[in-house]
Length: 216
Image (tube, rainbow, N blue to C red; front, side, top):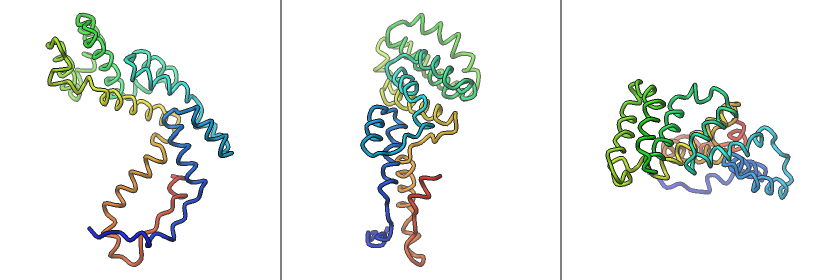
């Protein structure tokens, strides 16, 4: 791949307002409400009402998932976004699985088994959940589930991923962007970087409008 010459992009102008919008989008998306409010006050930006609505509730749900209270996260999600989990069965199954995992880790195996039979097994009848359900149930066979072949289900990364998916789903529910501008910009920049060598063979450098991107 050819090395890129930064001088080819000297014509690209990034406005301060665009940068501020990217930062604010990231703060709001990740529920950093106090930092977002401070940022708004320092920059003099207008408060985007639609983005700030229910941020405290999203933050609570997010942390309930991370802190091992998936059932509370489900309850609050159903209040904030009715029918979301009913429509998104994959996400609902993942949240229920977290509660099952927490019971197993607390050595409440009988309670975990009863929960699996009443809540997980009905969903497990669908073919796409069979393998997941088998992995979950296999945890019961180990005195130390964290040392089992399914140890990844107990990892903070697994829990974080589900929390992130739930946060994006809640944002998408009222038709707000499910990814922050920064995340979308990084994704697009990665794709552009991968294929840019193909564009170098064309007349002139490829153009990119940050303002147009932020409007999408």
